Image 1 (cartoon, helix red, strand yellow):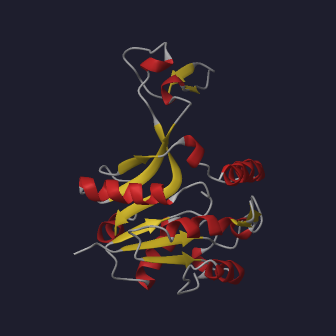
Image 2 (spheres, one colour):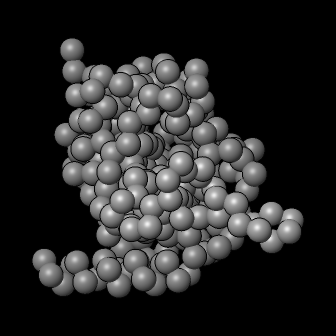
Length: 230
């Protein structure tokens, strides 16, 4: 039997860094629309929903074809609310799906190929968790803490210090674009990050995560450039 996937786009109304960020227009459409449109192209996603406490965001999401079957409780939309809580709530409101996929609206350069690629990796390797990552251009093997005396202490202890970048072990960071998990396991772990989580590698130019006004401006230019090339 074909597995079922519930995709959740979490988008609360409060955004201090960039007010009304999730529905602010970027390259001709609301930010959240970029994620909705790519998710709707997926050949795996069974149901796509929005989790939001904000009526305006809900209305915009619906205009782009995303279901909003509930209004997120205010208690799950505070600054201090752990990111996993709204996802667990969404699963409770829409039960019965084998897997949950989380798509942050702040990753507008993420494509359907990235979404389906992460899902296909998880299914092919028969694992329960997969998250998108990007190779870091700043290696943690060349990073240090400074102790109370101002002396350098390596973040990662190494028996042999690599003096050439090409000799360093590649390091990857979470880019926030795609999270996939088997629903039953996720409800137990309350996390996408386990000892068996797979890392789906995305290119740096697809891994833009909008957090600041500068990010917004830079990402908009990238999106406009991509549209002009098409």
